[in-house]
Image (tube, rainbow, N blue to C red; front, side, top):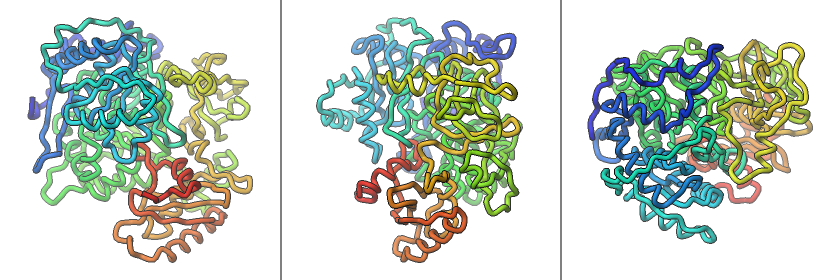
Length: 608
């Protein structure tokens, strides 16, 4: 149905209460047999007439068309599509979702799970620049069936025909399945420790691989997020333009399954073309309750630059929660957005800097619900040597670090020397190792990598000040591949091991160098810089800012070399300027440094 029924602040009997997920000590212990599907079925029974999902379609002229589906309607579609999935795929088979961003995509994803198959959330091949990632995921997962829509059918079939050496999966059109097909649905018992879906990593530091996310892991992580950012109010709703196949996109459609609210969706393209659409949707939801959204750094910067309301627009952001994460949080992104939207009621406590990875389903840590974003400044040279030493903000070696707050409930996170496996004391930078029910089961079809990443063993813990309380110390730990430090009870993520730039025996963080480059010249498009080490030394790749396509880059290159030399003590071997969009990106929009380096070394960077 179309339109927008106004939400009501009502308490419904029979819905899951967050206290149902906690034991006497406050630890997360899910009720028996809790899965995404059991939660959806619960909502269908108790809030069937309430909106489950809303999609804002911006493809037509004029205002967006709002497409709503209630929990009861969603249940009918879910059973109908599941019945068809059951005819072409069995338990444990992989079923890929290759549909455009839509409510049909959500139906397809949950239908694959409800059927007892392993969902593979992906995207339609028209997503520009990511055909290789899609092919990698399909060759890796080898799906029995592909779920798509009538509109995307031709492009899907054309793409599948190019995948030589791969059994051709059956193609099922989600929107072509009649509601009457629900009569043929056969209920399936879902083992909470079985794999619900494969979450393919973003490809920022290596080719994407599938993380096995169990029913228990995803339900646990949703409970952790709801507790961490205080989303226990039934009158809380989501707004998201994030790709649905992304780990945070999946969480945004997962939230309403837990507490019976709804999430408003739009396409990433709709946001990028007009970020004000995101702001408008947030404001609209604020009128009827609390609203939560999530995005990486670049999105908040883009909205601050291009998403300001027009004169006369009635925008109110007084009741929003803004999750910012997926990479080291940029204080500049937070400050830009706060400054731009403070006049529209944005609270100082709206931003929730967070840390998460696909291998842990998503969230690992975030700040308290009533906390404001905070930043400390660390000595650049000592940080490169693995020590977090605080300095004044105006210190010449100061590097800003945003706090990601506290680790989620019922999750253990220790900072470890990645070479020795020994726990490090607070103030020492190391690799976060994790243990908890939200951790994925492993990598699909990769036993050796699974053992290396998900089967790490601590060699020693601290006699005092250890962070292993409540953990199975001798159990398996997840290596995150990141670098972080505990200071004064808060977690600070400093970067990724794979991204570290090591020159003359000293470590440098790429985002620190990239920030210097962005400030060095107005020719640099802010937020679109990559820095990496090549055989000849430090290389900087920057996209040109709007309006500089014909400007001589020589003065900007000189300014960049001087700034990096002065602040970091490093000579720059090469500086390249590319047009907007020239730097490789992950499917979530982040710059892919490793891919950029690979293209640079192969001579294909900027060659289209």
